[in-house]
Length: 247
Ligand SMILES: Cc1cc2nc3c(=O)[nH]c(=O)nc-3n(C[C@H](O)[C@H](O)[C@H](O)COP(=O)(O)O)c2cc1C
Image (cartoon, rainbow, N blue to C red; front, side):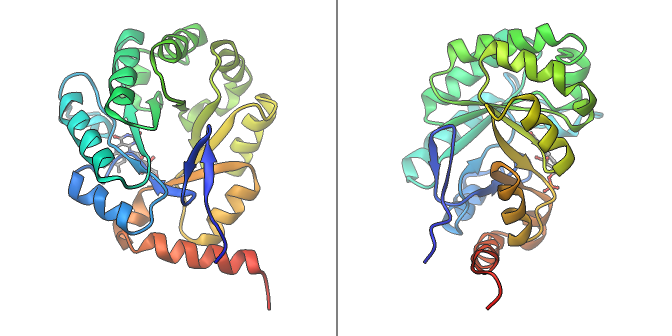
């Protein structure tokens, strides 16, 4: 059997596809994904306090303390690595949450700097010094590798963003699974930054193509919600077929 494993910032994943932060949030749901072959388990984005907002649905979560409990229980179960996702209104909040999730056993911490609420409050792309400040503070505070999730609408400014990430010492990003954008950021970061691609994963062929273009791993949400956890087995079958090529 071909080994389909990968590493993200030195963290070994048994399979290169994981759920994207979002739909799957409870211990029961995440445990099922782990048993079905997910390469890692991503938690919904946590904020310091419970977040419910009429306009900003992407950040709905019960607050970081509840998600820390989910993290500890998943780690104790011994499944694939746990990836925490955090967001806040200040660099201090990002740094605090990143440290707490790492201490709870998360193997990677994703800074959700892609959410529209973050764009509206912290505004890390209006002034890239804010982006650099958040990343610097988090990297100082967090003992595990950090991924920065970037929004898709900043692609035209990737030169400046890549420079800010470099200044802060960021080594990994999560970006939309879009080849033109991914390739541009890879070029801007001179291949020094590892990339996880999110979204638009429908088949094992999509996964194989994105890995060939330079992604280290992928995150899927909508199709996983539709098909359920058995999607991971299908993706693995299709990836093996894609690697074997035509008979
Ligand atoms: C209901 C819902 C909740 C989401 N919550 C989060 C979240 O907590 N953190 C995050 O980074 N992205 C969140 N997202 C975005 C997803 O992670 C993902 O980027 C998006 O669905 C694209 O992937 P797809 O094409 O596989 O659906 C959410 C999306 C949906 C639909």
